[in-house]
Image (cartoon, rainbow, N blue to C red; front, top):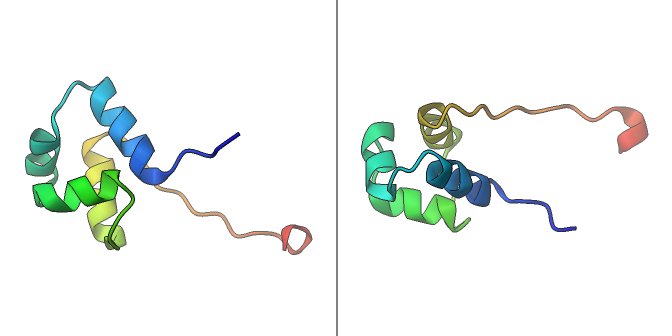
Length: 71
């Protein structure tokens, strides 16, 4: 089973909330081209940019440190 990418999750959430890319970009304070690249998993956005988008969508990015057994 293929794991969903961050861009795919953002796009799915945006569509679920029925907002356009333009609306999300404006609400997030980022450029439309940046958002388009994020949804396509292209480019290299900063964590700050990703967090702006996720916050606007009511999402949170979390990180977990692997245990030694998982390495």
